[in-house]
Amino acid sequence: MQTRDRLPTRIKIGWAVGELGIATYVGITMIYLLFFMTQALGISPFLAGIGLLIPRLWDVITDPIMGMISDRTSTRMGRRRPYLLVGSVLFGASFYLIFAVPAFESELALLAWVTLMYLVASSAYTIYDVPYSSMVAEMTGDYRERTSLTGYKMVAARLGIVIAVTAGPLIFTSRATLTEGFRLMGLILGAYIGVTTLVAFFATARAPQIATPVHSFSLREELAAVLQNRPFRILWIVFLFQNLAIGASATTLIYLITVVMKADAKVVGPLIASGAVVGLLATPLWVAISRRLGKRGSYFIGMGITATMALPALMIPPEWYLLLFAVLMVAGVGDAATQLCPNSMVPDTVEVDELRSGKRREGAIFGAWAFCRKLGMAAGAFLVSLGLSTFGFVSGEATATHQSDQALLGIRIIYSLLPLALWIAALLMLRRYPLSEQQFNAVKEQIAAKSTL
Image (cartoon, rainbow, N blue to C red):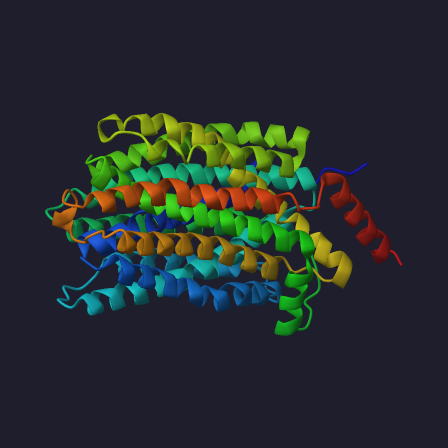
């Protein structure tokens, strides 16, 4: 019989507040950054896509290394918390700089600024997020308590998305030009990111930690350990397909609304918020369902719901765009599971590696996990930029209502059929995931037995 390793509610809530800033950053950059580059700055979709992709290629290096560094950090504040302190300040400031673009006349100069500042912001995000996320496996070793802790985080993520996607369009459409509006949005939300991420640092001052000795560093050994961790490897691929789908649909939504449906950009915020609110309300339900069906079974159902909801937008007439509210609300139910389940499953893979190697690599595993999420979303946005170019989309603030029929059809296809194919691929891969609650508890028992020898 497993003993529940319960965390105080105040620590769960305080730690989860840090996710508000993360969700704001992810939501704004995923949903509005390509739009900012093509419509506010007039950068071509293909070049804008390249600019979004380069910082994510940088994450190939920084995310795993940040995880390995935090695994080997030893301070009075613990292994992870010093990076929450430093990262929160850098995170908010660098977010603002993405949108504080000087008045360059050259398209390449505009592209270079956004790409460079996005790279800096991505690095600050890594410094904060990898240690922050690693704390799930460090604060509790209980299978179900990790689901509960992740549930708090996912509720905060939903709330953060609601705030970001609602406030974003209200701010960036409040000025004479999109460029001025996005600059103001960057300033306001950058300050918000800095404050909320800092809260998690102070709230976890008394959080428990699973103490482990600092072991010697070998990059080859760390990478090999992650690759040889079969449950993690399968889950990583599933999560990559999922984030490709999310990145593609979220990036395309504002084009679907403003270009195909010819509605105001302010509609995007309430649309996404409606789905996020439903997801927020559904998260506790999925926590309960996962106790009955297991995390993998719940994940299957959630992905099935979300995948199905990709299809209606292919057929909804422009004048009936309000139907998208119903579609996104149903999708929000499934999306709650697709965020809760994988993020509560990945901490369990830490013990799988510990049983094999005798070492705990929360940082390395969550570094690879953070990279997966960022790569998927950025690559999904890049696929959108390629699709827009292929279908003949024309950039510029004045071109929103003057696109060819081919471009309009292309936006629908990119929003619907591309994510559907990716969700199906994720479902097929998830069938191979082997780690149930019983198997996880057996792994923990084997680790305990080894420690007594």
